[in-house]
Length: 497
Ligand code: 0X9
Ligand code: ZN
Image (cartoon, rainbow, N blue to C red; front, side, top):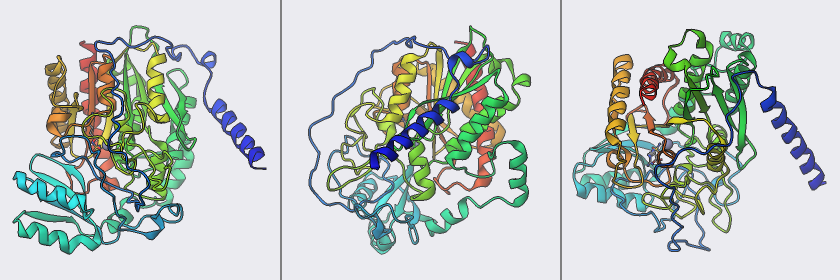
């Protein structure tokens, strides 16, 4: 029975994939997907094997399903294990995590000064004791999520050391509840007439986003096509949309979103770009029209869905956990194969920055690798959208070093930031990610740069820690609009290479 139903599911899944993925020879002129040529490489991809130290076996850990950005002061690997205690719901204890939504009632977001080195050490200690977890950071402050039972302890610890802090969010669950209100009836009616459910007044489920991509491919077959480049752990499609006027001399730009599940503004922004180019292609600037655009709005579809149905603050993919601990998930932005396993990564499966057992161990990152191995498109830029902090970051991320053409990356980054400023008045900082943020190896940006793709950036979208990951829906349009202005600057730069 089990295997028969498994076969049925498999057949249905395969036929659904076949139906939704146009075959190459069914595509209109201009739609062919370039195949089978490797990207030029100015530096060979180096894969460092996993260190054998640090793995801890056979210890019962209660899964805390969120947080822990690499702290800037963490210099080396996060190989030392810090068991993480769940402060939210007993249902998340091993093996029972499928039953209910994670509740963040009473959890608070604080902005804490890190101006003195000693203060960072105090915070690291609190984090190790699982009293806090760290979110975003800038040069002078760090945002920390304080677990409800720890509020008194953490207050005492900070006051004792005279560390200044502000409470930014009093109750995280209230914010989560308010974040994505349902649409009114007019909008629902409009959606039916439009032929897809996508808009930029709401954060959408994966089904809406993928439905939107399919709708565009059907509506604009001369310039748009969609295909699945692979399946996630849980069998969801990783959909890639291509927009091209078919000009054979075009350069190509690759854009991904949603590597980190909880960073909802990222898929929202990437789909905004897609909508703008698709719906206005004829009147678009030549810089836009003469580029082959490749978009993956949700590179981590399982994680994204998990944040909608179970844990709003989930970051990683949904690789199933194994063993006693059973911690799920790999940080996809530590799983790409350039300097894999280096600084700012962990080999502990329960860590938020777990790098996975080996480079490209995950179907989601593997799908991207294979796509690049098999395409003849000439990529000049690779943009990966994240949140939050308002940064335009370029390689290297793995360590404090920059590529030889860092001045070009810096100049174009600054021009992009200026465009954002002039459209939406938001300030974005520009620099190499190891310098500006923290060293973290295995990111998609470093890997793209290692393939010889000139303009590789990680864009950390809004905000700067007022709402953090829980950015209210009224910010979607302004953030995406100003970001589109920066994408136009990037497109112009690509034509000048
Ligand atoms: O830590 C990350 O993966 C990114 N920040 S986030 O808050 N969205 O998680 C920054 C990645 C920068 N790039 C590299 N370190 N390669
Ligand atoms: Zn991210």
